[in-house]
Amino acid sequence: MESQETKSDISLQKMREVKRLKSVEDRRVGSEVFDRITLKTLYKLANQGYIHLLNGAISTGKEANVFKGADEDGKIVAVKIYRVTTSDFKKMQYYIQGDPRFNVRSNNKRQLINNWVLKEFKNLNRACEVGVRVPKPIVAKNNVLVMEFIGDDDGSPARLMRQSKISNPKYVSDKIIDYVKKLYNDAELVHGDLSGFNILMQEDEPVIIDLSQGLVVDHPISEELLNRDIENLSKDFKKMGIEISHDEIKRKIMDL
Image 1 (cartoon, rainbow, N blue to C red):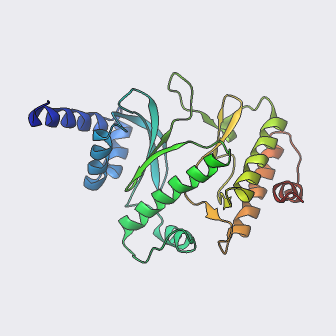
Image 2 (cartoon, one colour):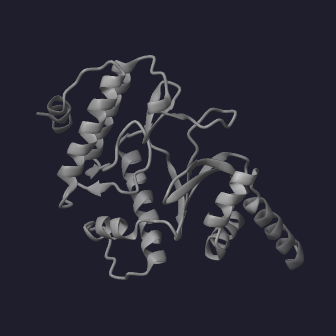
Image 3 (cartoon, rainbow, N blue to C red):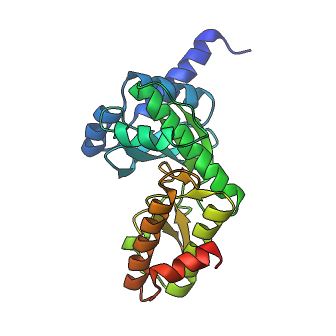
């Protein structure tokens, strides 16, 4: 049986690895992201085997950063960490309070972010269950979401659709419309912020990401956001050489 001291040494080593950042830019980002509670959360996830290494940032945003990590078996994972200091709490509160899956009455910012992360976890699960290609969620704890890494076997992250050269635009556009249709009819979700900036290309396959703001279809503004998603996609498809109108995409989604 391992001694308590040995267990402690292993945990401390994991924590050092979790906190390790590669570059000056990463350290600057780290000072904004890794507050005391976030570090404690990462420590617990490390002890549970979900995170063994945490490397450089894959993407940075106003509300969250996504890092490339590895679990205790060496499998690459994506680790999304929401920032308490810069998140848009009014938007989060509005979207969550209109969602019947959550009963959030507190104005506590950290609790709101924790629920926001849980919301993204649930949305990703629902999408996976109906066959929509999204990063498979692994675990959500407080302001940290660990999920499937979308990229190649060498650890290079997939590129955004907006930044990719699409070899088969018709296939990709049809696939995305089919995913939105499945989200709406089977998962009963609307993405709410869908565009070529929230779709990754893994080889020639589209992968929908960033479902944190995703709404259930009976949310008061779900139709408004669905129409916005469709409009964004219509413009993106046009840039790919696929001419398809807003109304035609909506008919396909609604099966009219």
